[in-house]
Length: 238
Ligand SMILES: [Zn+2]
Ligand SMILES: [Zn+2]
Image 1: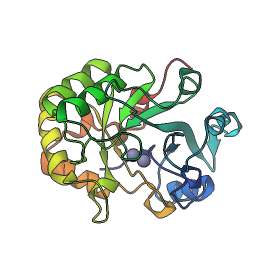
Image 2 (image 1 turned 90 degrees about the horizontal axis):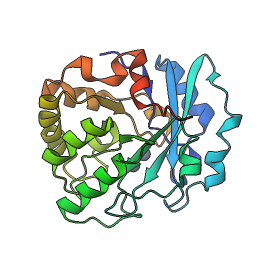
Image 3 (image 1 turned 90 degrees about the vertical axis):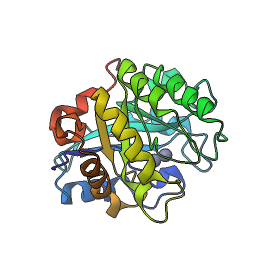
Image 4 (image 1 turned 135 degrees about the horizontal axis):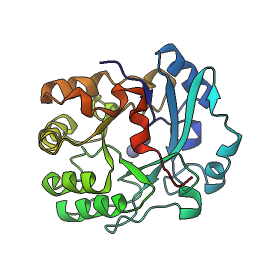
């Protein structure tokens, strides 16, 4: 499967990542991607960039080194209502918003509470992707999550970093297999992302592709498998 874009990547601005925008972009070019997305952690993540960073994306050109560039954010879900750590005034300027549960920002709740948090975030019109819905530290009711994703036109992410041995996320392979088997029934569009925190991981979704193959997931439902798949996750209220 050819993958055309990777839009979940971090730079040094996230506070715990190791490469620059330029280094990431060079890697995206080397891997043959046609588009690259920058999505640093929003301000509630310790050490991450303040809101003014995300307000300044206007200085980033739409095309750099021959690659289409999208500017987004990985927002933190702060409570079981799905409230995020950035105001609408910032979110509306993003090309896309990923919403995720992170240990420094929200304590794991029951499966019901965690699922309510993600569904609450999906109701935010700027949220287009749910990041890594595979972390056993945050058990989820996938039977409820997946129809909600379809209803709110939000893509679920098959996160490559979740599968690496040193990932802090729990039982990601098993959890991903579970949610993909349900998502397949609903024909839910999915997105493959590296979640790179260092340049050489940009564009690497090898483990995500293996997870899709194990699940027998139809390629036509993989947003990155075609260039115009990006349209599904772009904010239209720019
Ligand atoms: Zn994350
Ligand atoms: Zn991330």
